[in-house]
Length: 142
Image (tube, rainbow, N blue to C red; front, side, top):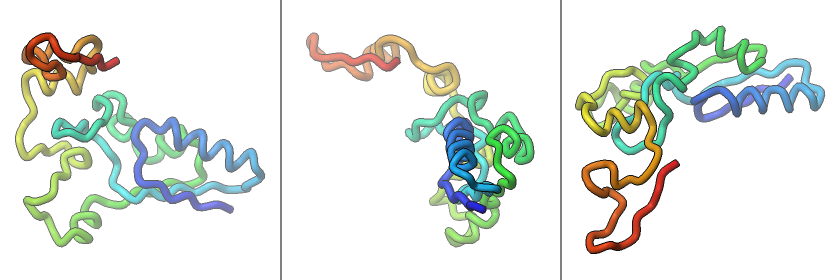
């Protein structure tokens, strides 16, 4: 029997590979424990997260995720427990990716980039976020 502790499950693809490899190595049971609440919403404040549609916890129940990754059991840290560990529901912490409640509602170009992804030049956002003025360097996000 093996218990795997991981920091989070985002899409579920890595967890499913880990569970499969451990079972192929001979484990009779694989139990997953996740040290964060389920990630149900994208971060619009700088953390590189997939769109909400790609987040497995936004689309599936815990039991459905357990079946998808192939583990014998799955448990996440409850959001209330995380808040308690951090000293309560402090305004100094953002829990939006766990709750879907944003301190500042995302809108406009930022929301579109996170929700839809960005292909092409960063210059397409506000005239050149990734460009130096005067014909300098630019980069591409793919």
